[in-house]
Amino acid sequence: MLEELKRETWEANLELVKRGLVLYTFGNASGIDRAQGLVCIKPSGVDYDELQPEQMVVTDMEGVVVEGSLRPSSDLKTHLVLYRAFPSIGAVVHTHSKYATAWAQSCRDIPALGTTHADYFHGPVPCTRELTDDEINGDYVLNTGRAIIERFQGIDPLAIPGVLVGGHAPFAWGRTPHDAAHHAVVLEAVAEMAFMTVVLNANAGVSQALLDRHHFRKHGPNATYGQR
Ligand SMILES: [Zn+2]
Image 1 (spheres, rainbow, N blue to C red):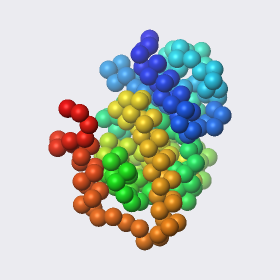
Image 2 (cartoon, rainbow, N blue to C red; image 1 turned 90 degrees about the vertical axis):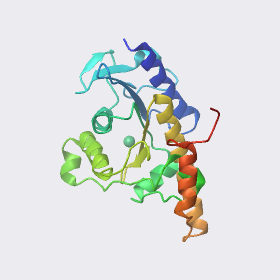
Image 3 (cartoon, protein in one colour; image 1 turned 135 degrees about the vertical axis):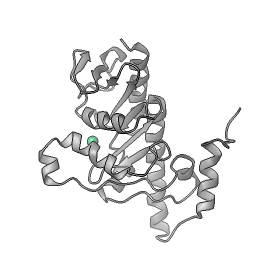
């Protein structure tokens, strides 16, 4: 079942390790088959060294396991909330990558300070509010997803394919597992650059014109980046 999606999701999980975004068993990637309404996600607590494509867990949109003998990632419900709210996305990645997490723990949006950021994120990478005690003591993982959706009111998730959860860490997404992992890696790089930039110049900033120029070079009907 969903062999191709399992392999893509497995590869996205390994990409997070390869790029230094996860330690031990932190982090998870999932992908969705929209036609069947099924999600493939990393099993909970399995070492990346031992992770096999066939171990990826398949669940329905309610989180009920449809195939697989292992328990799905404990963050599954956050992924499901994102899939329901953002019909344009096909994969979700969660890490505790160092610099993006530092911004999340500081409860600060990552400001758009240059063209690397603008190539991927059309505006600041938003940070959610912190969850209330009731939300934390209740259905915490689900409420994490809801806080993300609340923060993304009026924001196109494909124009800004990532978020910081206040006090926690980043989530990123994309059309495919490969895209989502790529965005998580770029988000970490952008977070590191922004941190250094703010240290060097607390008033750093660039024009909207420059940010737009770079963003629309890669995205939208007039994109010119890469080969035809
Ligand atoms: Zn986490």
